[in-house]
Image (cartoon, rainbow, N blue to C red; front, side, top):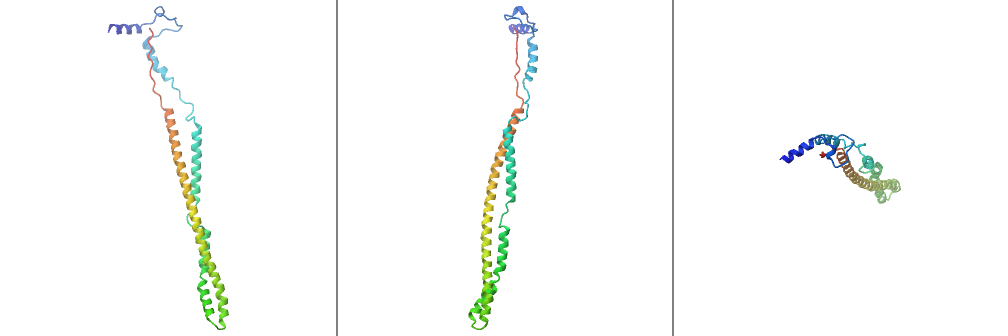
Length: 201
């Protein structure tokens, strides 16, 4: 106890150059309590603030690139129309109109073939062209449905591929944004400081 009290008294007393084994310094002598009081203030000045908010520009550039890419993909997805195209629908509609000629053409041909009178040639003359027009209408219907279905399947597959690519880019974009926010949080977080105690005997 007495030794501890003596150490405190010696540390609080001004330091005499004659008691030190080292070479005397030019500056004034300070007590241990003054050094302890000045230590937190000096340590607080050792933590500088970063000059820029986010020094890594490559991460921000990648995030901007992915954001633009996701926007372009979304526009392309919105521009893809599902279902049969308009040209196929028009072709199918005209095909149904022309196919109605079969209703008149086939009976006229059958009646003309069964008739042996003078009206036979007249019935065949009207029946054959009407039947040809009707057959062309049926071909247009089949072509319109098959072509429209194929284009619709291709558009659907392309749209799904774009959606999958957009989903992957959005996942990468979320990961990069989380990394950027985490890096900024760690960069701006104040670091704990340990005060330094110095006793000059």
